[in-house]
Image (cartoon, rainbow, N blue to C red; front, side, top):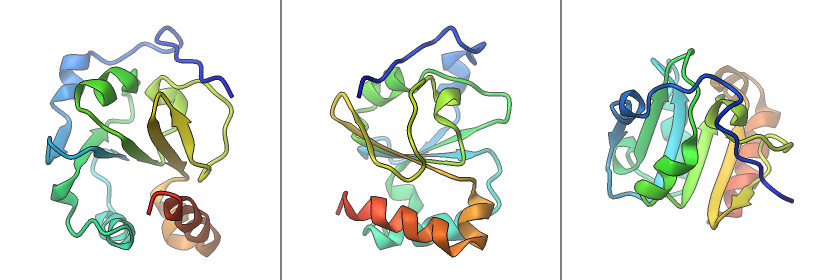
Amino acid sequence: MQLNIQDDYFHLTDPEIIATQFSGDSNSDFLIVIPQDCANMELIQKILSAINISDISDIQVLELRESDSISIFPFLKRRNIQKMISFGIPSKRLGIHVEHQLYQPLKFQEKDLIFTADIIALKDQSNHKKLLWSALKTWI
């Protein structure tokens, strides 16, 4: 499968602004992308615990505003990210224009990516949790 990266599809948010929206351990090779002001951080922490990440501050976190569209790969490269989970942020908003299914691990340039449905679906629908767990097991 060929992954098509396009920066011109959306108006991209200034990368300097995006850089200020990162938090956590900048030395970690693991990134989660979440909506700004995510109300279900407890659920995300439980998910991370299942893959032996005891505290969200041990990884890199990018909180995107509703209006943000970016090209994620320069950030992944610059920050030495190897694995990324995007919780409810569609791949196209991250500059990745390829057909894929949610919860299907996607590999590109030696980076492991997983895209999930929004946090509410993960919280309320057990089939979403099962699909995510199946995808995460490939990383363990």
